[in-house]
Length: 624
Image (cartoon, rainbow, N blue to C red):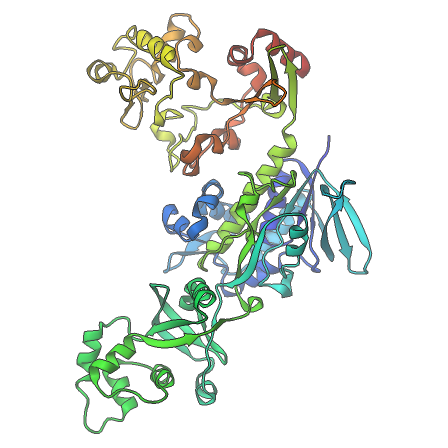
């Protein structure tokens, strides 16, 4: 059966979502109300297309502030390394600039976009320009139907588009000339979705310059200064404009400036005009004034300030520069600018505010509108320039599209055995997932580490009560040193993590029962290997959580008294807080879907132990 997807928005997030969906076999149509696609991508590339940043992943994640935790799984799943590999696959190798920023080799967006659009076209993606999204059609009960989108064409006519899933990637409101005008806000609010006010981010500030200052210095940079606001300083070049101040360090502190203005009505931004010298050093140099020096020549010669910097000092003091070296030094190190407004949202680089992340589930699907997914700058997060904006746009788009694939494919077989209603995820049962431990499994750490051979064992095994603990203790006593690498450690300190006997002990970063690669008795779970050697089922030897993986069972008691058990594959979210930092989740990675048989056959013993013989036989019957 054909699977269909509507992607709304032709910017970077929309195109990435289209690529992921098309690669999963969906028939994808991308709609945008502009005449061409990727215009926002081209505009972002005017300064060289800073596509991501090379700093360590934890430091990169910190740049997303209060939304770090919400974005972390998506960014780790499609991190800077993968984004750079994606660029290379399109023929654009990347390089790291002196500031740590990452750029395509051509330093331009055009070659990358052309190659990208060709690949999408070759994958069968359809492009529908000049279609403005109006929202969803009514489902007949007064609620939006996420499967039916309504668009207005350039001639004023409307068209209804039906698809299995929809991914919204309409951007914020800071790029109206390329389509991101925030028109979607009212549509989603009308559908009951909480959307916080869209505000300018990464923007300049307005300053009430005098006419003389603007006439002489508008368009002149303040080189190598530091801008302070909100308790933090950022170095770089700031640009004097006719209406205020712009540039990297101003953009970086613009969120703090904006929020302070909202709270207090104004914000004092301070400029350190000589960040390479301390205040004492500036004062010491200024103390050596020659008798014939004018004030301007004195400051320029002593401290090395430009004409624009000296004039800025005059501007902030009403041309009443102090003559005392210590007082002037304080001014050089912290020239105060009173700011009452940031630049308007249509002049900002990005947007703050958007869809409250609490409206989304872990797959970026709107909880109130199942089948509708959201990515990119429509979401309520912000980050400074430096590659963080595009990185999050690509990462959330990838996560939303993968979520859409999983949601569309997630059909359940329901089997009632009289005591329990079993709901079994048909798509996972039909998949060719297989354990690839020792064959590329990257473990469950914060970095991929296939060479360690840790697999799922890094945390030890959580045990299912006292009976399982007693059974495990008895079985471990049967293991000989030549089949149990950590036999001596077990004899000396036991096999349990602590006196609660609720989990196995961790030795050198993994479960005590994990024989490491190179062990003469065989690498892998010592319990599993011992069971096989004795011609017994590993299910009888291993903790239940170990033999059940990757199968997850969710138990629920319905209001009508029926016990429901949902059988599915594990996801990142099932690992709890640990899942946020995992660099690899095998049930979400294509490398593990290489088995020769479907899961319903390859995990026959495990599934039978979980659901019972009769239910398992019925599952097999339905497959055939």
